[in-house]
Length: 437
Ligand code: C2O
Ligand code: CU
Ligand code: CU
Image: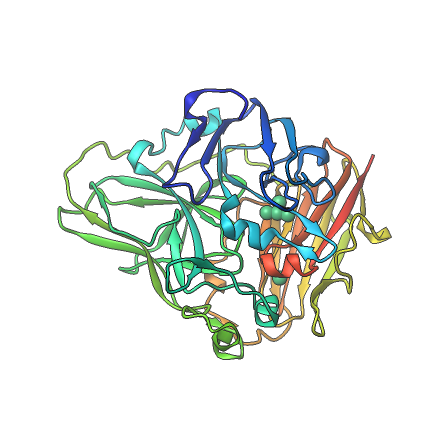
């Protein structure tokens, strides 16, 4: 950041992942990006409604040794967003590798609506970045590509929270706000409480829900965020509770753990955040019944056009959208939308893998989810899909058809839409779309 209040940047741990950036809605920010890597990179502001030329797209790489300054107005609702690299050269994308190597981090936007709610702050507000990583014997990070990882995505053999192995946090008997980013390349988390209590959701990737909702567990796909509330004010000193990722079935090949040799197959159960009540505290504010009464959804009518995107597998070449893979800035006729229009996009997943589908430049509403085909061995994630609220990334499970409603406002030009399994994206499951003025 060029300048700003001292709390704009906060470190989450050592230097991995990237620092937490805190912004206020209405602020104008300027960031200077210096590329000291031996390869092209970009900085993409995931989830933010910004003009195409500051969106950090692969068509605008920062070359090694070069720098770029971007400026934009912070226009989005309060919420947890994030930033990560987005380069894609002739030999494929480097989003997976560069994010894995540490170039991604969380970004929080604050606004007045949220501040008025008086949600937990300070040590009662935890920002958690979940990433699975693989370590060699010498504790060096390793990243394995290859066919298995192209199909399934990279799965690490341990899970890190803010760059560290999960460790017990000492807490007081109070309400806590857990703001969680799935910054993993490909892993889907099934967030649950170790004692089976329901998970209270107050927000998604695009900010607060209209009102809190309870789920038995929360399914969090790569690039998605969720805002949780947990009230521990009844707890006693000595009580323990853990946020875990619970078991689920992940495909017909027994989790396909064999293909990449991951020690932690998709769907394995593990702890993410062990908590222990160690001290007394007071000041337990109640959970607000209404979070944002003004939350809007795109104006859908019976005449709203529907655009269909078939998610399919390409023999030995990964996955495709309507039969196409990434072709740089080439946009097909059916990938052009009009500025100001509201549309329904439907993603139909006829493949054997889940696809977290992401659209750049806006937040959308998930308006329908339907099973229309075989699940191909994926089960145990459905009841945790949080479709309420605003999203920039929606998980489409095998056999599902998911409809989203989106409005293309303010900016015309090129944006991306793609699967956010980073290996799928890097291997071509990504396209540009054009907003025509
Ligand atoms: Cu996280 Cu193309 O974005
Ligand atoms: Cu994005
Ligand atoms: Cu995918």
